[in-house]
Image (cartoon, rainbow, N blue to C red):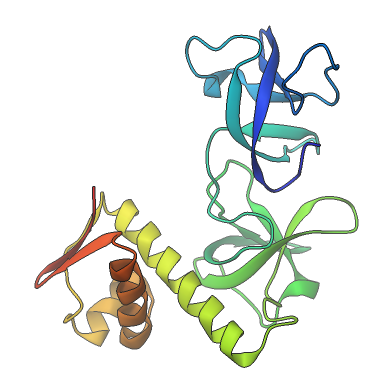
Length: 215
């Protein structure tokens, strides 16, 4: 079964001028089942029918299921801190690392949001079977679980910012609150907690004047 909003391994069934079609059935004798397109500009070299590919599944601008080899900043059920790109008539549109921005409906906002702001959101599937965002991230969570979710989201956001700066921030955990707020939009306490999580996960190296990604 091809699952919306998740990363999964699918199998190449055929090549076309538009890309390759994928299915969840590894054995061609069983049948193709549902097929979805992986666009031509994302097809790895030397791919052939039967090849296995890890892909993420979402919907394109025409509401069709489509695959990508790129990893989005959020997947189904996850909570992440993401940037608002714009606000329109039905809600806000949020950057999640793929070409089509995700909708955060007004009905799923806990407060008014503005373009350029970072918001804590959760990815879910709405009643129309579309991927959508909500700011009601703490449903069913205890206060302790809610706090943990926030810290993990801050850590992923900090990792994204490090990656955006080519793997290194030009300041360490002793930077002033003003510098941290200006550069990252975070409080110093949130920044230190996030850096601590990433350090324990061995994803970063903290030095006096910088924080850099481990290779």
